[in-house]
Image (cartoon, helix red, strand yellow):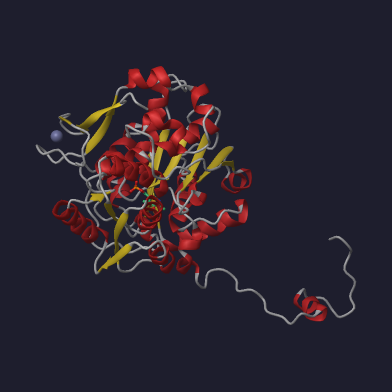
Length: 422
Ligand SMILES: *Cc1c(COP(=O)(O)O)cnc(C)c1O
Ligand SMILES: [Zn+2]
């Protein structure tokens, strides 16, 4: 792309414009900054035909991503399956249900590879050699892996209570992993200080406006795989509250460019854990401001952000689209992880359990109507949060390699006949 389709950054509160630099807040009112595109220019190059002609990864929508040159990091991210989930649909009593499965995203098995691919490609463009992040787990692994593959030095900061799989999943890539005695909000505050003082590129701090745009590709893929249309309902997990907004933005952009038909009437539904529910609480109590949760307690550690950066915008979006938000406790999270495994053969992490359990609750409440099309966003892989299932799934039966013992296990008497092929 020699034409620059990204014009700059803009404050989401006051509209003040800024150049394309590593800056995430407005110096007048501390409002978050968002990327501004030249949509007329994008519309001259991007259409269904062009998209279809490109490899099946997130860069097939590259004109709607905020990098000026060729992408250099995360070249194989995206292109995850959208699965028609009929067995789960029957269990929930809905007509048309899909799972967007980012549990199998390349390379680190979560949707975070999308935001990291964009943020690190931008970091390289801006000349950074050292990058980092404040993470609840998945971001750390994704920054570590993608930085390693790009030859960048990485510092990842995490709370000190994360699952073993999440910690190992950053250390293996040679990143400097620093565990902070505290929760995510403490980690995030320290990262802002480090990014400023050391001049490093922190993907979700000073590079956040670019980072956040990567989440749109989850929505672009959903719309494309539905046959170029937006669904009636989307259920998305919320940590900082960014992903849910970007999925909706992706449908709006596609409609504005004539790639799908508008107007977009998709209702957005947000999912949180009851032990850390600042955004769903805002929606349910119709509060004007997001009240931070001081001490998050949930097995869904990837969603445990007590003071969500985009919480205000997420709750506004949910209201504006006619959606709703709910939260669920740890038992409901585990039940939903099992239900997804048993009906669709998908092993999601705790955040996926949150999303499915909330979807189920919203269907039961009548907030999601049973006739419409619903997409449930699965954002991370269950192999990384195994602790949540300890003692919750059956242990394997152990026997000697003997047919007799197997028959005894089946509850058969010795010599009893079993019908062949059953
Ligand atoms: C980070 C994360 C989210 C939510 O992301 P936000 O954009 O911060 O709301 C959802 N699911 C998983 C598994 C995550 O790691
Ligand atoms: Zn401003």
